[in-house]
Length: 452
Image (tube, rainbow, N blue to C red):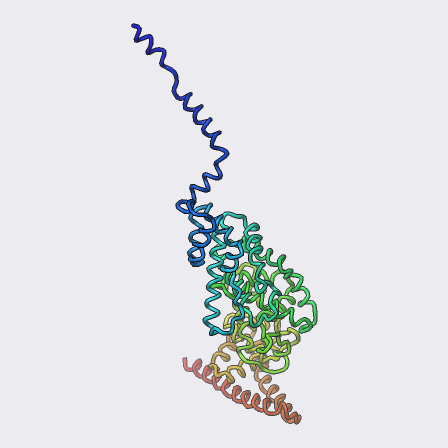
């Protein structure tokens, strides 16, 4: 019986004792949480002095360091600290942007790939930070390299700095949504005062700020536009550049960024489209930019917007030669060319449209393009006119335009300007051949229609 009584006295709730033990243990260890947590996530590296850890990083590639940064938060912080040190900065932020001893292609690919890997490292190291804080931290690190700045290099045409910055930025922001990329663009605008600089060049006389035009062209092309693999990404950044401005200023910016430049100093050639017929290479960049906005289906750009921009572009800085207009339309592709010409047909500009047809035929003749393309384009445009009388009037205007332009060239040759005589004679030669081949294709088309 005594034993039963003793047993009753031992029924003390054990869980109360354990709760109090846990609480006291928590209080005892709370002051050491941060140190113990960091130590535990370092793994085997916790036995190494920080200096030795940084020496190990010297033997890893940038890609390997970026992989290591994802192991734990503690290691990530150690790597961030390493980047901020003088040896880390010197090793990671290469400054060999002007090395002329290496073959050009080898030099370009080596340093560009390095900055691509560096972008991945920073992307992973700053993964847990808000976008604004990420950008501030990255700017703080990259600000040490002058060639990565908007106006940091004294010889920008021979410098790979901005291209490396663009490669870095492309890797950093790959996969980010549009809102985050908007924030990146706004951050860059604030950092470089880009909007104010653009305002200066779009409201000043063309060519009056040549150095600033060159800087803006290089920054927009090398940092924001040229390194994307997907056209939709390039269209997004080009839209950010153009859309804040009225249409007339958009055309000016487009010409500065993609227009013809001097091979010697890289400065924009403003008179190129006004004074003489140009070649495909001078217009290729502009045509590609127009196609980019038209074809990628970005909601900010309708077909009418792109055609209006193309129309404004043809008077920058003054009205272009029609041959250059025609060449740009051909390079822009069938859809843009037809839409542009159809808009003129709808607006009753048949005479202007007829002259444009003549110069489309002339460019086809000079470049040995198929003349039946020009004839079929005319046929397609002809269907836009709503009545037979309008179509007949348009075809008559095309025939008259051939005759008038030939006479204009003859008069120019007879005027006796020796400097222009040889080029004008060749233009006349090509135009006569263009007229003959154009009408030959019209006859073929007519005969084929009659035979069917």
